[in-house]
Each structure stands twice: as structure tokens, then as C-alpha cells.
Amino acid sequence: MGPVSSPGTPDAGIPAPLGANVADLLRTAAGRYPDLPAVITMSGSRTWAELDAATDAGVAALQAAGVAPGERLVLALPTGADLAVALFAAARAGVIAVPIGPSRGDTGAFADRVGAVAAISDDPDHGLPISLDPARLAQWWTAAPAAAPPAAIGGGEDLTLLARARGDRAVMLSHRAVLAAVAAIGELGKLRLRDHERVLQVLPMYHLAGWVVAFLPIALIGGASVIPEVGFDAATVGIGVHGGSAQGGDAAAAGRRATEAALTAAHAHRATLVPGAPGFYHHLVTVPGAERALSSVRLFTSGTAPLEPDDFAIVRSLMGQPVWEGYGLSESASVVTSSLRTARPHHGSVGRPLAGLELRVIGPDGHDVTPAVGPQTAEEAGPEHDRFDFVADVPDAGEVGRIVIRGATLFSGYWPDGGGGPGADGWFVTGDIGYLDDAGELHLVDRAAEVIKVAGFTVYPREVEEVLATHPYVAEVAVIGMPGLDGQEQVVAVLVAKAGTHPTPGDLGDFVSDLLPPFKRPAVYHLVSALPRTEVGRLDRASVQRSYSRAVGIPLPRLAAVPGTVVGVDPGSAGDDPPQPAGAAEEPDITPEQVGDLGELGARLPGTGNREDRGEQDTDEDLF
Picture (cartoon, rainbow, N blue to C red):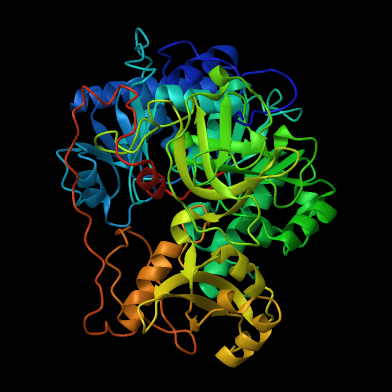
């Protein structure tokens, strides 16, 4: 059985020259579309030529400051033209960019973690030897043109980004991986990019979803990024809150304000594409006049987490067109599959692999669990996979298995040594569980690391969450596995109540009794004031586990420390975190990692260690 490939035309994206640099996209766009806008804000715009010239000035500034090729540069900047020029300047200078979003006073901690020597940040206490504050960056736009535009330094297998630096492990991405992803996105099915598209930038640019998916592909066609006046940087939790404007308190209100600003910008500048997240669409359907504001949009896409079924249906009815969903990983430089590779979207399906990518769903024996569509020869299929166990078989799970992928978009391993990357055969074992339907389309089931084992049975958290989310008093829910009094794992539901309600364990237990078998029903219901989410709105179950652990005093030695927002535990109504129980696990500080041999970081290193361990280490980022 061979890997799944995409149907239709035998396109393979727009191939980048061997050894190309990500900033070559900008140089080419500036040559082809010099006077067309690249970035549009409510206060003005920057053309492709201006962006290219500012990037040249940025290269000169980095070199004058002493930032050498291969060194790490932390970018603590919000979404906007300044972040775009900083990312391009780093790429052109051969510097490895580490975008972390607006500073929370933690620039130095993350810089230490990746061995950075420089930062562009408004945090004055980062302690790095080289500092370029945002005011100095603003001067790049007015600098005199260089007598001879600088040539790009490095490319191909050299690293250009460390992605997800705020997550558990920084992902090493080469110029090759990013350019392959951009090329594949530019050729997505019949609805591929058209000349001079205008993309509504509602995904943060310091995340791969906002940079590689939403911004870089517009360089191929002279498009523009339309940036709302109220950025989603200021609503990182709110964009993922369920309940629209009625629930979620300050977080939901922030998401609502950002959504309204996005609609204003889309209407003013005639946006044609909206790559969004589920939280954006959840707010969108509550805003009066949204369909008029987005009347120029010809394509809606969604990623980062599953789109709610009701939102999927309402958006389709409201806008007269569907939302096309997809799935991706930071380890694949963004998109892995998209429903744009199919004839039409089906809710629950995340489509088929992008051009140039292969995908398998394999069982415990390392073989495909479903007959694959696509190449069938041994040469095309590649070597047989290692054997490993991933979850216990469960009668109602269907033909599920671990998702594994191979292609030019894959990363070079995790910082600092390249460990955990694709194997010698090029395949990467993800931490996601899914299945292929009869049409060869991928459906996501859950995260392997978050599967709960109860009395020998497997419980998928998403399934329980979907049931509880339909309770009239539940605004948000996260289902986690925690040890009970007997030491055995049990199902715990951490809930945010809708405003003015107070669900009790009895109410919730009665509700699920007819909808879930006994082993899937939560043993504990725990109320909190908010649930943590990533910057693209994805539920952060690991943070939920840590916060619950602190609240009830159960240590979690097997959980890795991941910096993020702490949940405010609320036993009854909204409030502050309770005092730390005696013996509860404290969240460790970020510790610097030993810097790897820079001479090896440009090579595409085979993954090291056990495959099942590598699958547990990926960054849990469903993107697009």
C-alpha cells in the first residue's frame, strides 16, 4: 500500500531554485509589482518596492550591529509591515529569525533558550548584547537606497526560522521547507491564488499560519495583506473563545472588537481572501452586517482547530459559500492537507495532501490501516515503517491510526541539535491520530499524547468535549486525563460556564449519561473562569492539565513545561487563582538549551531516537 497523494492535475507547486532564499520571493515581487501595495493598513500602505528597499536597509543595519549569518534574532513585534520587513531582512542576511510576538517582558528568557544574540523588541531588559528597538527599525523605511542591493546570504537547507519558540520545542525550518510550502499553497486546487489578491490578515504574522500561509504566498501574485486597525495580537485568547459576544468576559469582548475591526478593514480595502481560525468565524456570525462587509471575499479557509459544526453551517448560509478547512503542523512549515484539494468541503474532513506531500495513516504494526489512494509501487511507497504502538484498539474508533507525512516542506528537526526530525526514509511521525475516508480525505480524531486510557479502553477527549459543548450551560470545555485516588487515569472535564449559569456535577452527569458510554463519562467536573489557548486560538490542553494539577495538588512529572497563560481556577464563579496547595507542582522556569553545532544546522538531519517518542514531541499545531 502506498501513501496518499492529491487527485487532479499533476502540478507540484512552483518549484524554487535549488539553494533559494525566502527573501528571493520579495526581490522577485518587487521587480514584477513594484508599485502595487504589499501591506495595507487603515492609515496607509507599503508597496512591494518599498518593502524590498526597507529590507535592504535592514540587512545593512543587522550587519552593522554585528549580527552574523547563522545567529538567532528574536523578533518581539506585532503583526504589521515592520514585522514583515524584519523577517525578510533576517532571511536575506542569513540570520535565523525567532518570532515570538509582542513582548510580555520575557524576550530575554526566550532569547536565552535559543542562544540568540540580538532582539528587536520594546522590552528594555532583555539583556542581549545587540538590541534594535522598533524605533530604529522604523528608520529602515526612509533609508537611502543601497548603491548595490545586497545579495541574499544562504538558502536551501540553511535555517531561516525557529518556529513556535513559545511552545515546548522550537522547530527548525529551512529556506527549502518554507519555499516548498509557499509554492504548494500557491497551487491549491481550482481556487488557487489570482493576480492582486487582497488577504485579510486575521492570523498573527509571527505564527506560521500568518506568515507562511497568509502572507508569503501573496508575493507570488503581487497581492496585498490587509491588516485591521485592532490586531488579533491583542485578542489571542478571545479569538478562540466560544460563545461569541455573549460569553467569555473580557477575552470574548477582545475577540469581538478585533473581528469588528477586521470587517471594517475588509470592507474598506475589498479583501478577497480570508484565511481564518475557528474563533474568528465564531465571532463573525454574531456581528450584524458581516455579509456586506465581506461581500468582496471569494474564499474563506479555516485551520488551527476544528470549526464548530454550527459555525460551518451558519457561515455557509450567511456568506453563500463554504469555509474550506485544512490541517497542518509547524513541523511541515504550515499546511499538510486542505479541502481545497477536493471537489467540495465536507465538515469534519480536512482534505487531501498538498502537492509534493505524501501522507499515511498507520496502525501499531507500522502498516497502513486503510487502502491508500495514490502511488502503489515499492519505490514510490518508500521503505517499510518501524513498528510501534500508539493507542489501544477501541471498538468504536474505526480504522484510526497515527498520521505520518513526507515531503519537501518538512522541518530539519528540533532545536538545538536537529533531533526528532524526519527519519532517514524522509517520513515524519506526527502526534496526531486520524483516519482516511473512502475518498482518501483525512479526518482528525485527536492527539495521541492526549488520549485517555480508562480501564483498558481508549477515550478521545475531543469526542467528550463535543458532547459537553452542547450543554446549555457550557461555554467552553477541555477534557483531560488525570490520575484518580487509585492512581488510575480518569476523565476530567474542565469547564467555563455560560454567563449567569452554574452547572453542577449532577446536571452534567445526567446530561452525558444518555450520550456517552460509562467509561467515557467524566469522573470530575471542574469550573474555571477561562481556558488557555495558543496565539492562533487553539485549546491548550497541556496548560489546562498543569493548572488543574496546581489547583488540586496532583503533581504531573510526566508533563513538559511549556510557557503560557495560567488558567484562573474558579470553583464557583469568576475569580482569581486559589493559593498554591502544599506539594503542588510549580511551573518551572524556562531553561536555556545548549546550542547545537551551527555547522550541522544547515543539513537535513535524519531524526534520532525512537519514532514513537518523536511523535510525542511535535508542537501540537493544527494550522491550515
